[in-house]
Length: 208
Image (tube, rainbow, N blue to C red; front, side, top):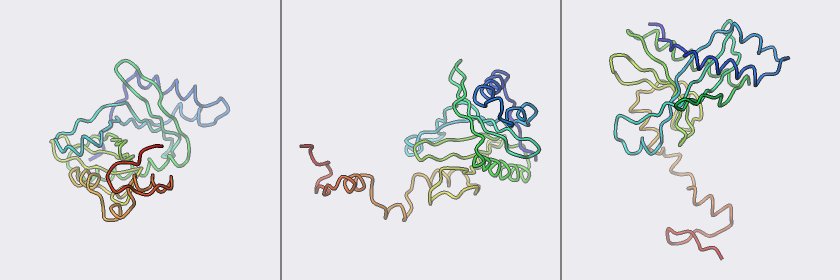
C-alpha cells in the first residue's frame, strides 16, 4: 500500500516558508522553485542511548520537530529541519547540498517497503545522538513491530538502507561488534594522544 503521508500543520509550513526566504538569497534559483515544490513532511523524534541500554520497553522517544524534504519532478531541492518545543518553532538547519539528496534514497527505500505491506505504514525519523545515527521508522497501524531503515551516521554494525526489525536494530547498537571490541578504547586513545602511559589502576594519572 502507499506510504501514509503525514499532514504538515499550518504553523510548521509557515516557519518552513519563512526559513527558505531568510536563508536563501534572492538570486538562488532554488528559492523560486520551492514555491511550487512537493513537500514531504516527516515527524522527527530523538532517543537517548541510555534509554536503549536500560532495555525497558517501550522506549521513551521524544518528539523534537519535523524534517521537510522539498522535491520538484522527483528532483531534490532542499531539506529543512524544524525544531518544535511547546510553542517555540524555529528552523534548526536548512541544506540544499547535493549530498542531502541521499535522503531521497531512504525515502524510495521505505516507499518500496510500504508498497509491499498489506496496510498503511506511517513514516517518522528517529535520531539517536548517542551513536550519531539517523533512521526512518515505519510503523504499522495494527501495532506490529516497527521496521527501521538507517539512512545516516552509520558504523560497521549497521548497514545503510537495510530494513531491520526494531529488536535487531537496537540490539546491534547496544552490542559491540568484534571489530569495535578490537579498537582502542576512548581512554587508550586519550592517553596515547597525550603520550601518557596507561595506569595500572582504572584511574587517570593525577595532574601535576
